[in-house]
Length: 433
Image 1 (cartoon, rainbow, N blue to C red):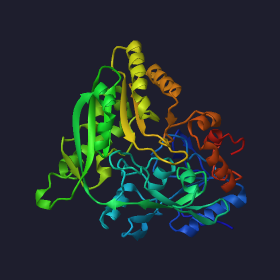
Image 2: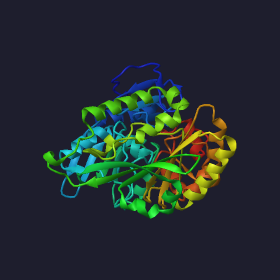
Image 3: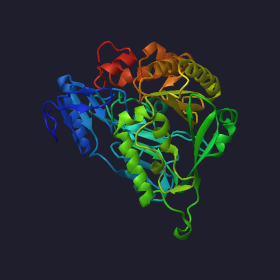
């Protein structure tokens, strides 16, 4: 069976986390049957197949010398149950598009922190499905998955199946994720506020973060000063009573400036203290209709870790001491966010209330980054899948209690490794991808 090629054949150079590669073909299917044909063709020819999202990850998840699927044309809502607040969305849908379509039904996702340019399939596959505390007792809104398996057949994993927590964060290794079922809540406005504070107070008053829907703070690994940003849901108000919305002309100008900063990485590396904190310097009271308007499209930081909130204070105390010993100047910037415990087998927040830490080191501060990485590693921090992971399967199994359960499910659904590449084969200890 030959697949239907919708775009160019031959060598195509694509950047997909961690460098350039040259897949033999790239295809952008628009309907489910075309995705099935691509999977069946790869299986028949003994090829490998990876699915590319929007390039949010820095890990080489999508590197493949055989076939690369892009679901940028496979988008939109397919099913909406407004009574129970459940929707099914195609995996290639961007978060900004999804937010607008949900707003038309008076709904929104329960978790905040979704960048607007990220695809829903890519976000779910790496466990980046929003952050938050407050009343988000169920951190993950994913209630079902639909995939095309290694045999080209469509299968579903429903909310009541024991496989769902294991399969939710799959790194794209169980099959081609085509649809995601999401639990939604009634739509509200969000208000973001920024204030100054102290690191010692933030670590002592972790309980206070639960009063907000979202909390993040920025800290240079020297001193005690931090910048805190909180986001809370607010009841919708009549248009005449609303403040300036975030999508005003001034806000669009700020957003364009941030995108320009993202396009100039050499500037952000040289001026981390002055430039990067600007991401948090929004007006003290900002209303937004969509949560993604309050978040940048790319993750801040060259390193990322997830560790229990209870251990955050000790780790940062050690980090601050090492950074001051290495250099009296501010060379490292941290962004810390909180997320509720999750039941996903490969979720960084599995079984524990988690602090997600992104770290950025100034240019020429490589030893600072290496020292910080060693501190987090000794503390048993879990990796963020959007960042390159250097741990082996045995190390990861010690950090994720259900690692072997996932490895078993992956081997059952894809025994030949159709959906693996060299990077993922190394993570799971598979000799031949």
